[in-house]
Amino acid sequence: QVQLVESGGGLVLAGGSLRLSCVASGSVFSRNAMGWLRQAPGKQRELVALVTRIGSTSYADSVKGRFTISRDNAKNTVYLQMNSLKPEDTAVYYCAADQTGWALTRDAYWGQGTQVTVSS
Image 1 (cartoon, helix red, strand yellow):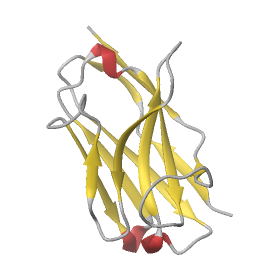
Image 2: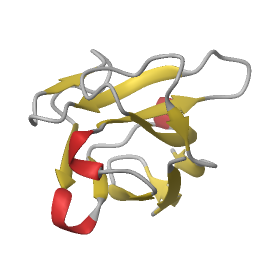
Image 3: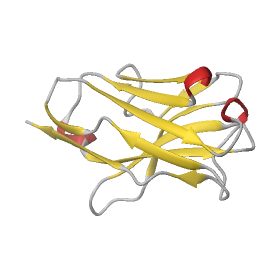
Image 4: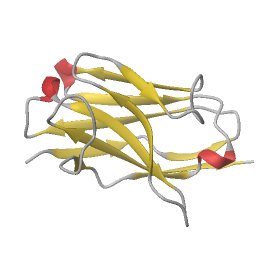
């Protein structure tokens, strides 16, 4: 069983930055694929960024060039640095972990989420 705890959300003005953190426990962190997803009111949950167990990253088109996902295996932590935030980035952001190491599957574990609100 993997436990995930997110932090770092909050209220920020458009153009500002936030860094989300997610601490994982209960598994060999370095073997997991880790991702950040978000869900805005009335919308489906979408994958924002993913980092595989070997450090390969991928991003949604809507955040490319603005968001950066990274991982610190020594701290069992994955980060999402969000720059140039826009009001449309407003959502609950969830951390996810998958023990396949390469993608987020139906067996992925989820955190409780952290709210990010971008004000114009």
